[in-house]
Image (cartoon, rainbow, N blue to C red; front, side):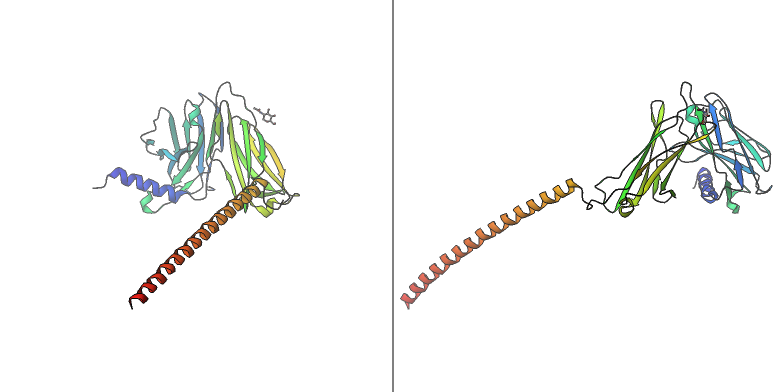
Length: 309
Ligand SMILES: *[C@@H]1O[C@H](CO)[C@@H](O)[C@H](O)[C@H]1NC(C)=O
């Protein structure tokens, strides 16, 4: 017997997967910048028509999966998921096309992305859910100064051969409302960029790293510029902080310690070969000696046979 809860969960998951479509039909407050203890209210409205009267609210905390908090319609009471309560979260649904969601008495752990989604009838009738682009909620802690990052780009390791990885580190910033972009000779790179999903907390500040992977022939061009730009939002403005490095000349592609290693390996191989041929030589000498001894014995036996005949 399958539990109804399980069916509900599966249906919800299917809805989430089906619902990850473009968010342009659903608009929501994009940024909330609040102090600890405040309330944060997110508005959501959509242009899907009055059939899409169901509104769902989700949140995704840093490094976690998206979780549904509450489901609302115009005429019913908000339906909370078991782990969330109306003491902390409230939702309104004044009409079919809009709704609000509030996180009350904010704590730093509330910071994250909050999503609004709208849907027509139940998922099993085949109606898709449409998601907003998410609201980024920042909860400022007391005695923490808003500080932009310092940014540094590190050149790739000499040990890398075919591809080269440039590392960009943004550090010393608060809060963690940043985005990272890379440019090669002024052209934005989107492929082959990997940025940490969550910033690392170090005392009162955050750090974050991003990696750009390029072909080694792209790196080995001294006139080429590689730029890492970190856009930091300080509550009113977005401040860009960047650092750049230039490519290098290809010095035969082989760093000194690699050369050394190859030389050492060659020496070792050579010694092994010499040792092997020495052992082989000894073995041959032994065989020769053994064969000589044998033929000696044989001739003496022949001789004795000859005597018998
Ligand atoms: C944010 O940046 C702008 C522009 O640099 C500046 O005028 C403003 O004071 C900054 N706000 C905070 C809270 O640091």
